[in-house]
Length: 257
Length: 320
Image (cartoon, rainbow over all chains, first blue to last red; front, side, top):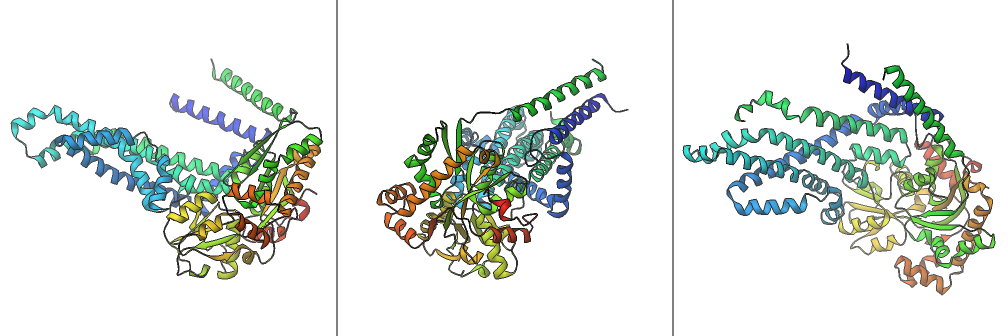
């Protein structure tokens, strides 16, 4: 037997599908505004087969991941240094409070002026989008771990590198994944909007560009198919990959808490 | 509540929803405003004249019609298409290819008038480039959007010169003309800009910039750059339709006469020197006419490349 929540969800989804289909077939809307689901699913199949939708999705994902690794390294360095150097700590805080509320897409025009329509510009915006949430989470986590083990560190005179490898890193690993999760969702949304509005990724291979291009050819079914692909990627990453609980099992660091 | 009851309620709600949406579309609404959309560039100059001289207001008044006139400027054609489709626009001015794409996808719209013929040029800064054959995969071509007239002109040239219409389709950078100028000025040598007046002369001011392709050479014949389109709904409101058409005709005539006042007006709006504008009009770099040319050429080419599903006849393309 299926569990109740699953039944509820399936029921809700089928209701939505029925409403959509009825509106598409009997509603007053032209196909170009409201294509039937059959057309959308067909188009999705065609896009996967003919226009390498999967490759486009992989491309978008890899840009976000590269940006995330760069941001994670910068964030980790800044927050580790911040523990011992008040100058860095204060100014990281200052930068964070100034830059964090700026959406990546708002920076795009000025970044284009400085760096042109290059992949460097793209990466700068991605790093901007993902760096600040990571800095926030990591700084808080490191401060917490630092004060918790402050006396232990002083009493046992643990050397710097050992402190990092045996206390700080294991202590913050869960927060790192939480930071990754927030960074991913910010980065993913930024990437898609940048791709859609400016289409500046050199090879035009992202999902945002796909939707943009389908729009230019008035292919509404193709646009909806692109949206489905984006939603699927989003769900996969946000609810599967970056759930910290799943990683604890592998890393086994929960004993610290 | 049992599952059956819930399903019943849902079903009822659905029926209500669909019945409601059916009602709203059939309700007759009295026309209270005319919404007109154009884009960036000198090719839309008659509309600026119409706006500044109040020519449409005069025509509407002569016909005893009282409506508000709303002007909107869009950065690309697909937004015009979408606005029209969702009922937010009466009259739009676009290039022939995006109009054809809309028609092919079921839009009930046709051309009611030509507007302009214009020089359209692909401009490069890289001194190693003399033609399309010299472009590498590193080069980027800035143009308003995929499927725009600039894109189709590029495809036509790519086919005749390199035998592959899609040669540069992965190297497009979609930007509106004004944004394109900024990107072209500040960007690297790898950037090219496919644009129209007055943006051509702005681009050519950049160090080393020169034209490597002209639209006319791609098409191989004269063609209309921008056409006026409207949906059946507006066409059927004959009084409004006729008023707009005659206001447009008068605006085009005003520019053709080329009085000093008109030149001053346009040179202020487009921020180009009056002499340059005068020379453009004299040398027919840009010209204005209601006549529509080149429809067959675009329709056949876009069918051949698979952008359109069929070749359209003139009756299917023009209102009368």
